[in-house]
Image (cartoon, rainbow, N blue to C red; front, side, top):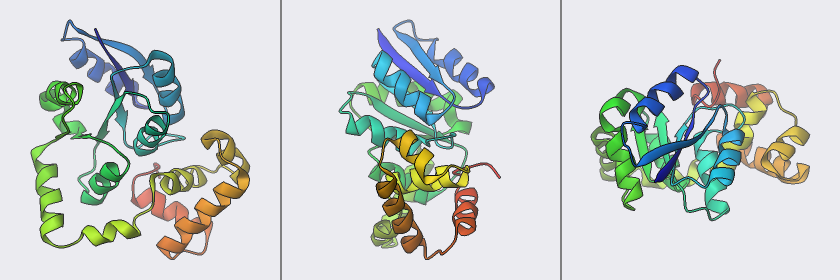
Amino acid sequence: MKRIVIADDHEVVRSGLRAIVETRSDWIVSGEATNGEQAVAVAVETRPDVVIADYSMPLMNGLEVSRRLKSMHLRTEVLILTMHENEELLTEAILAGVRGFLFKSDASKHLIFAIEALLDGRPYFTGVLLEKLLHEYQAGKQNTSDMLLTAREQGVVQLIAEGHTNKSIGVILKLSVKTVETHRASAMRKLRMSSTAELVRYAVRRKLVNP
């Protein structure tokens, strides 16, 4: 029996995904989560084969969930769901170790295939995403990945935008306050920003938080 965890902060989305997953008699939803921190905790507890994670979640986005699980050496694949057609998100997902990336609008048609691929050790990206990634390579834009925020920096920026202090961010991400400050400074330097307000606007534009 293959175990699947579903992480999304909208109950109706979780219910829809569960209904699709449960069409397979050899799969079971071993847990659900409403935010990224909870997703990691449920994954640690239930040791699923696949975590279906919304890109935009409170406390910790889907990419940070993937990074955290990879750091724990769990044999769990992460399938990111998003509403946003953005090639930069795809690049960031790949850099975070994500091997599955799917638009929510495609979930009804592609979710089963995506999970099957990840269970077989194969990556899965919908066709339009592959086209975007190929275009990015052909346009010679891959060097821009060096300027992207790391998954950890994005996680810190998201929590800053949600109103957390450096101390509370450290508790959530299990980092020292000094390390949080380092990631914050690094993100601001890469983004050429000088204020928290600018970071918040960046987080809203990138759909890390809801406005």
